[in-house]
Length: 408
Length: 136
Image (cartoon, one colour):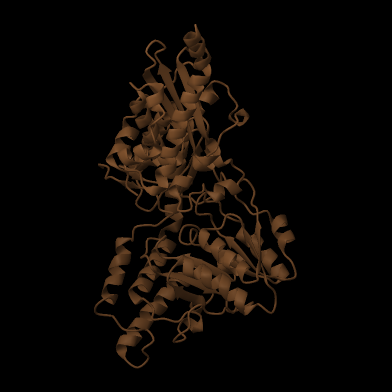
């Protein structure tokens, strides 16, 4: 099959909607346009039925006992805001301390920063070099004021999957609410809130081949019943936790996307892991001093993150961006102009954070695409190394750390 | 963010990539930036000791496309200039030529620093000889 350019390998930033998802959504824009909270006519009932079905589809893919535990939001960022701020406000009397990790996504870290400005205390525990939370470190961070533990299920940059069940057991033992940011995990790997003891879970549609603009927060109703203060007041929709008219077409698409993921996850995970390993082997066997970031085994099947010593990430992307879409932890590709704090938190040098490239595969990735991107990456990295003063120095045997660099 | 055509051209066809042996007579070397900041430029000039003209220039850069383009352009501009003329190249000239956006201005600043460092290194190595020559 002929390759179609550009090749999209940035599926941890977003995914294309599955055509089956779009098909499910379309009637809800025009014929079935009712308001799900209209209780007295068929338009409303029809919309409510559709929303309830989506709730069930999502509940199923995350292993929730009751579909009512699924609250729709505008996306992952809102779900995380609602979980963290909602718990912080509701349990204020009980305590003011939150434990999270240094490798959470910006949405979580920025919410924590705001909570700190409002009198909460947040402990950002470090992670191990493979990205895993050390349970003992987590245990020691807990105080009698701790009301919430918030941990990413799987990391967006390096793909490391946490041992959520172990974290869940610790949270239960201490009687602390556990929030999992599962935006990267849901629909990709088995997630079960009951088995893992998760009390709150954030997820989003656009990372599972659904539409942008809709997400969900799972809020446990039993053992324990978790309560959260709403961010948005209004008509009391979503059990009072998130007012506002539900975007029914998006919700329907989200539900269908979750349902498809549930059906194909096992096969898709195996297929993508195989392709990912092929890409990884190809790159690592052809380029010296290329380092895999994250956990070698416990990671998302579609994620590959490699640092190429002596070349800067954005320049690698620039060499590839006519034909493929990837992302980098380089400062030049971030809005903050800082290199990836995730790779930094794994103990890598800032230089290797600048040199990191993330390849994220998806449902529609083909073997031909993987081979093309792999071969071109190798070419581009080799070409850039030929023009890298650091590579030259290293080949001459100079220890780069021995040089007194004159930073700007 | 899309790149300007000139940045893309310098990135795809960098001019004067390479190195001179540091202690060759007439060579001045500048090494600026830092790996942890994500950009390092090595820029070298080779001055004709009879005419005082920069007859060749080379660079190697670790950095983004704009950093590579800025240093590539700098080597082009350096050739054929005297050391004094070369000292007048400003980062703003590079910004204008490559149409660098605000977030990439530091790449041009680094290129100007690299030029200055190479010129300073050349002067340090060769000025005493020049001074001797003029006093003879």
